[in-house]
Image (tube, rainbow, N blue to C red; front, side, top):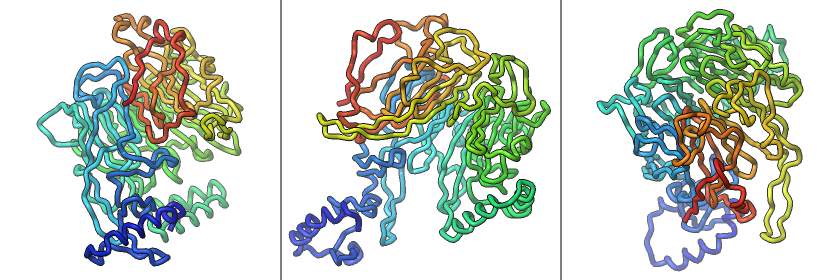
Length: 556
């Protein structure tokens, strides 16, 4: 029994005495280590078993591990292009300022320690969002997948006569009924969708996997490749498998043809590998496996598949250029691909594909058929990358979190030991680079407004960008419709409705946990339960002028 449960043990015993005359079935009770009678889901108890049983009322923060609070404290905001219902707003019109998303109900099965299963309904909380041209995917903390938008090309993964769904619905019934599986990652091209579906490892399998990883680390690269080829390629893998569905032009679904697929279907060519990351461009896909490196498939124009040719790949093909590199992260834009490697404490960024707008960051606009290092970022300690339509963001530095005591609120406030920098390059016509102009940048340049901020994550959309700080602040810049723009300031000229440098969006009363700059739309979510007075930002109305005028949302 944990410490918190011991603190409420007296309340449990009191409830027990008050209900001595009440006859309760033996199956409803469990015995604790100290012989205290404990009912699964006991009111007032916050041990792991009770939290799991009462999951419709309480949550253990899967996104923010420090948060345990009522489920009604979670909030999601969204804005941008709502055409064909892709903005989860039960509407098809554009939204030009942050709007609170409507509750979405999910069904889950909760099992207590006695093996009793209960089906409950609760409000879904999302931890990841992916957007295509006219559809969106939302991944809940319960690992269920919700979809909305246009289904003309089967991008939603359901068979329905209605080709436009404005309210997100679950498509878990579209996946094969595999035992104990869960969706752990999602991605979307313009008219197709992708999901990584995992089957949890048993204890013995986890030990075996770790032993194998340790053995691989002690072998030479040549021997390592031989071991992986001889062991992993023989058996079908049941873990982290890629499913795809939607429009299949250019072989983007990875099924060996250009045919469209109406419901989720496993990519058989990757069934022997454990996939850890997936990134999508306009019509191509890049996937990272646990031990077998990088694969790509789909549209091969401009060399964005990294094979040295411009041929399309109807099935995943291996990118040999990274055989001797450990890949930490991958990304993809309209017609290019990107990877962040980590070898001997030196992180490097590689880009390949179409070179228009200087996307390779090396001072030219030449196409690259194979991965090319961004030399200007050497030694910058890059720890994250984000790929937009035709621009790239890179996050460097550290934000080693420390705490200082606030004697006014008597609370520990997170601070940062070192600073961070956000570099941007590529297409800049809409201000998405944050450099206070609309020029393209052929080399990575730091964004001045963010140098004093402690950035934890970055995201890049088709024509806008955003950054999230350690304090839960959201900074946005770029195209006004896709990022943030007031109704009265919306004009036809993109230069008028663009934010050319980062500005902070204030959402008082909510601690932002995650934010995504999708394709022409933005999603921000947070938790009021994790919000503390010490995190509040003093409002300076004098600084809110022109494009910076934003509405303040007082959450009741």
